[in-house]
Length: 239
Ligand code: IPE
Ligand code: IPE
Ligand code: MG
Image 1 (cartoon, protein in one colour):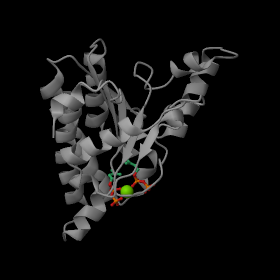
Image 2 (cartoon, rainbow, N blue to C red; image 1 turned 180 degrees about the vertical axis):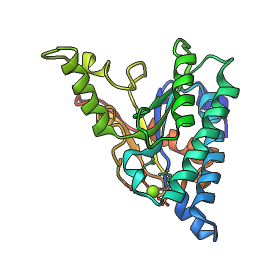
Image 3 (cartoon, protein in one colour; image 1 turned 60 degrees about the vertical axis):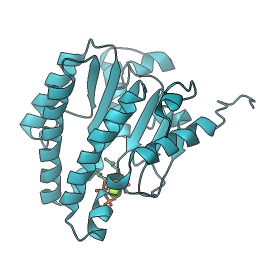
Image 4 (cartoon, helix red, strand yellow; image 1 turned 30 degrees about the horizontal axis):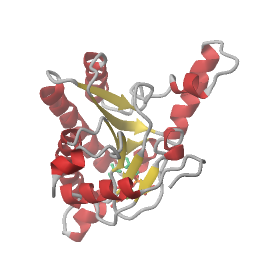
């Protein structure tokens, strides 16, 4: 695998979205608990974030926990919250002295989220808000419809009567990010499950069969190659 060659390819996506999926099934196949699947999934996440950053891709969004995921058993939700707290600590240790901006998309005022997760997330957003390098956006307690609704409600409270697309985007979590070029969802499921409905309107979609804990650098390279072969037309006639 020739990393340097891929890195210098102008067709690379600038913003990748990853819908982590299949942790539970991956664990079940191996006789482990679903929580263990999440643990391995988060270990893999660290590696993939590093790899994407290393490739020079400017923005990465990761769907970690949806507003619908509260419907899961309490034990699993509690374990995921524990992992998110660890993840935020890790981001702090690893990225604070680098040119990396951390965004956490999702309702951080929701009292169902542990206070530590809420506070650590808010702290990281604040501490890194003026960084101009790689942007790492983790979606926790995120729902795309809720994001749009909350944008509309903010518009109303700002007394705005009408806005264009650019102005509307200023009310989204992704306001400082590049267009979402490419969405990868592992485990073979072919849906977006409330991930970035506004931002994904022109994203290329890719659904590899492999479950998230097994999605390695080779799978990432393959995904990028698939993306680079796509003919993006945006309604025009090209290629
Ligand atoms: C994705 O894996 C992780 C989260 C949604 C937090 P799943 O937990 O959805 O795994 P499956 O789909 O049940 O296998
Ligand atoms: C989507 O995965 C949510 C996240 C990846 C955080 P799910 O596994 O919860 O989605 P559905 O229920 O299969 O649509
Ligand atoms: Mg799933």
